[in-house]
Each structure stands twice: as C-alpha cells, then as structure tokens.
Length: 183
Image (cartoon, rainbow, N blue to C red; front, side, top):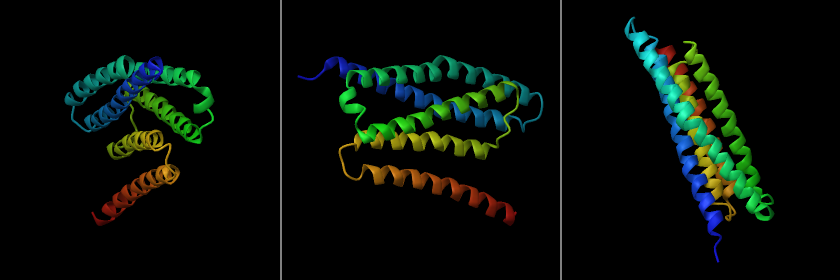
C-alpha cells in the first residue's frame, strides 16, 4: 500500500521546487533588464529601473523566497519520513550537495537584488546571462540525480552535465574575448 502522506508531501515539494526555479530564472532576467536600463538616457533609465526594482522585490519576497522555504520544508519532511532509505542513499548525498549549491545561488542572487535596490549591479548583462545558466545547470543535475538514482550511469551522467556546463561557460568567455579582439 503506497504512503499517500509521503506522496502528498513529495507533490508539494515538487510544486514549490518548480515555483522556486521559475522565480530564480525570471529574477535574473529582471537583473539583465535592470542592468541594460542603466545604459538608457534619463528619464527612461530612472523610470525603467524603478519599475524593475518593484518587480524584483515582489518576485523575490512574494514568490521566489517563500517557494524556496517551502521546497526545503517539504524536502526535509520527506527525509524525516524515510530516513533509513534516503539518508543512506549515495544519490541523496549528491542531491543534497547540489541543493546546498542552489541555496548559495539563491542567497547570492538576493545579494544582487540588494545591489540593484541600491542602483548598483556591476555585472554586465552577459555575465548575468551566464549566471542564469548556473540555475539551469543545477536544475538539470538535481532532476537527473533523482530520476536516474537506480541506474549505474547516474554518477557519470551528473558529472557529464556539470562538465558540459563548465565547458559552455568557458566557451562563452572565450567567444566574448575573441569577439572583442576582432572589433
């Protein structure tokens, strides 16, 4: 007989995880718009940045951060309901490590929000686009870890995705440097 309480908690964990990632993805997009608005002439710059700041604050405090908290709460709840299996599984240790990286990403993004509120995002829009891909990479790794936990190749698959992500970021940096030398 399936544990319906556990399944209900897992469903809520997944729903809030999707909401959390949606918030993270859109937040960085708003950082990009905010940064690009800095290059506009006044008064357009002030109007756009004020509006983007309001949007970022609402997204962060009404959707993204509450979704992060609820994702963690339901995740911990699942761990407490099934610790004998989950806490002994190597894939779960890896997943929790990547979730820790995701939490660091979340709070660093919050620091970027504070910088935007002060009118100072020092990153270029290209750097922010790369930052957005970090969340994408973490999402892919975490989902593959959970889905492929019972397969032999999940470790190499996870490392492969991580390696591809690093290679993409390095490739973007190299391309940008090459483009600057050709201009």
